[in-house]
Figure (tube, rainbow, N blue to C red):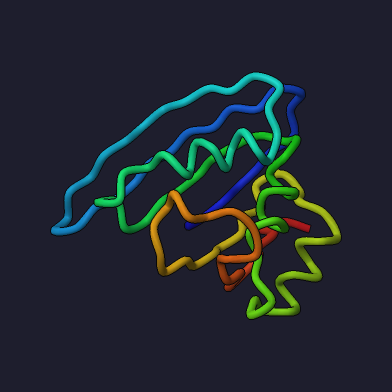
Length: 118
């Protein structure tokens, strides 16, 4: 799962997913003035046939969502960088080995946090 963000007063969640056997599906969802809980609700309803999920969203909420999902097994440097802020065009890479519906809190491993520009 990749979670990326940019500054905005509204929240827009777009989901693009790649399923098994090279299939591709896209789901576009707009949530206005939502937060981490709203984004997680969208993720929890992704079909289980989807293996990789890309969530593209605007602030606010993206940092809170990534911090909420990051488990204790997460890369500590990535976690500390993420906790410091979520600048425009940044993205967090998380792995979760169970169903999308079971994501709730501290159950995805933060593998990387990337800020493409200083």
